[in-house]
Amino acid sequence: ERSASRQSRKKVVAVVGGGLVGALNACFFAKRGFDVELFESREDIRRAKIVKGRSINLALSHRGRQALKHVGLEEKIVAQGIPMHARMIHSLDGKQSPIPYGRKGQYILSVDRANLNKELLTAAETYPNTKMNFDHKLQDWNAETGLMTFVRLDGSKEQVKADLIVGCDGAFSAVRKQFLRRSRFDYSQTYIPHGYMELTMPPINGEFAMKPNYLHIWPRNTFMMIALPNLDKTFTCTLFMPFEDFEKITTGDEVIEFFQKYFPDTIPLIGADTLQRDYFRLPAQAMVSVKCNPYHIGDTCVLMGDAAHAVVPFYGQGMNAGFEDCIVFDEIMDQFNEDFRAVLPEYTRVRVPDDHAIADLAMYNYIEMRAHVNSKWFIFRKYVDNILHFFMPKTIIPLYTMVTFTRTRYHEAVKRWHWQNKIRLLVLGSVLNCLIWPVLAASALIDSWTAGIFTASLVN
Ligand code: FAD
Image 1 (cartoon, rainbow, N blue to C red):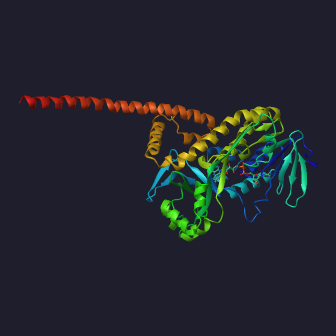
Image 2: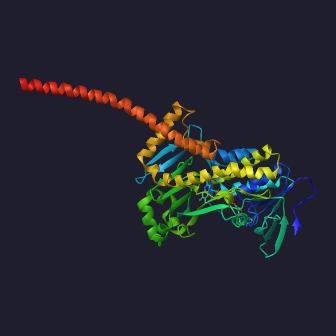
Image 3: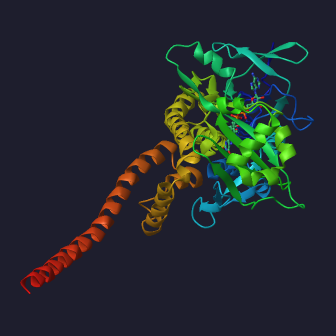
């Protein structure tokens, strides 16, 4: 057993998981001067040939950017991202219609997950008070003593003690397992019936095969495909579909038949041969939504990122919410003078309602994106919202704008959205009223006039 403590006044913080949130969190704690030890089960991805992980690229927005800014990384990461100003909806007949994300100048960024993770690890390592431990998989830990047991690839074990354990080890968190053994810990997990599969759309003559500054969407009601641009001028297309539909397609010909029917414009862009090959390269991946409460145990352990709240990826907020966790924790550390006994419960109190709200919103968008986005009613509502936002910018703020381009607390954004829906109905009602009365009055006038002519014709 080794105590991670070095000869310093500062406490030792063990960050378990060196993914996006763990690596960023290591920077936050190191910046405060703690002795930080990061433990990651994989080898160092900066030296690995193949980096296994989830989606190849993801959408970074305001909350994530604010967190990166806090550790001086925003500019660097933004410079390596591709702005997406609007959704580009592809209809079945190949027609493309943009729907902007917000006002002019508001955009989300397509960033490369592996590159972002590498940059964050390198940033964490630049602090002299941070030690990185790769090939350290947390096997178990003791909530009473804070003693953690790690296994290495060669089968050896190492025991380490820390003052604070920060669980950033993702949706299937090993840190969270200890929470599950305790009383009064709420936990739920839901797998959605859809899986996802990634396909690459190569450049054509060295250029992007489609317009690059958009998040392309092919909504097909019960399933959909999206595509985000990469710096190497490829697009990563992600097909979201119920597992049972994925399983129905078993031959190369069936793949082409399926794409011909639902995504015909993409066949020449991805390439029929590539499609037939890549569809069977990897099985579709599952998506899980995890909610729990509380996020802490005493003053020794706290969960952040997907370990605390895995959300389905349809609002593009999983990483952004995880990055915001780091800012919220940091703000509370200021408020309570780094006293873990006060900080941890306050973090749970403040953050749980917000992370639960974004989990619900992501589920809601799961249907909105594949089905509603297609409908005239959706486009009309977006249109009305934008007009109302223009005339009443302080009263009506579209939900997507609040979630993506502000740090309005997620649960407040939801409350406000419900309230705004009522206002919108009221405004629409009044507009209709204004239109209906003149129409009714005119009809009454025409009615009496035509009736007069008719009576006159009878008399004559
Ligand atoms: P992870 O990224 O899962 O990292 C966890 C780390 O912990 C990993 O490095 C893992 O190796 C390590 N680990 C696991 N177990 C142990 C252990 N026992 N011991 C030590 N280390 C361990 N979010 C967005 O904001 N925008 C998007 O556009 C977006 N798109 C997405 C698309 C898809 C298809 C998916 C699946 C997710 C998407 N997300 C998106 C969500 C985002 O990927 C996650 O929210 C984010 O990766 C969470 O980061 P994390 O560090 O908490 O967890």
